[in-house]
Amino acid sequence: MSQVTAKELEKKLYIYIEGTPYFVLDVKFASPTARGASTMAKARVRNLLTGTVLDKNFTTSEKFDIADVEKTPVAFLYASGEEYCFMDNTTYEQFSLGAQKLGDQRYYLKEGFETQALKLNGRVISIEFPVYVELAVTETDPALRGATAQGRSLKNAKLETGIEVQVPSYIEAGDIVRVNTETGEVSGRA
Image (cartoon, rainbow, N blue to C red; front, side):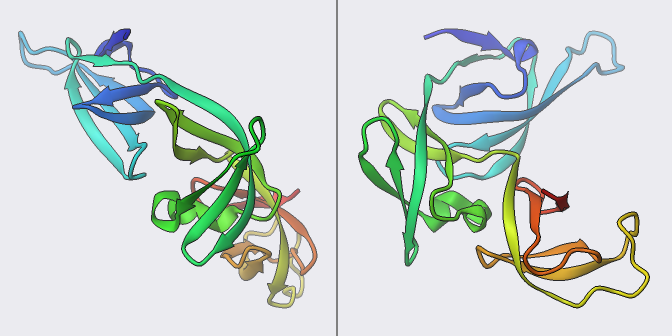
């Protein structure tokens, strides 16, 4: 198994920290002002098993094993209670993941949605969502008078998956919007 040091950490890297697989979301390096102190790596990482995001500090000499994560194309089929059923597009095998494992990103799933499953040692451990998804607006407040596409006023809207978001005032029911799956913010019409 190959290794990297903390000073070689970079975004989108899969590593083991204390035996648990993590995905590196962001890395910053800080040089302390004290003499003889070593440079620190400040990493924001997501636990692949639980989905929790943590901020960790490392000395640049620390070493990490690289996690052998395999990506497989999958399609979302349906939700049954707290279980979400997917199909592997290469083997046509079906598998389920719980709502807790998917976290808030489960609100961006709709039938036929295609994405990537992350496998560790042949077992699906997580789903990788794209940064943006396109969803239809099913309900929204009426458009505000005088609002323009450049306006900054927002209103509530309900999307086809049931999630409620803030949209610009010019968006109406039936419009397709681009939603950031990491922040939940709408970036405008698709």
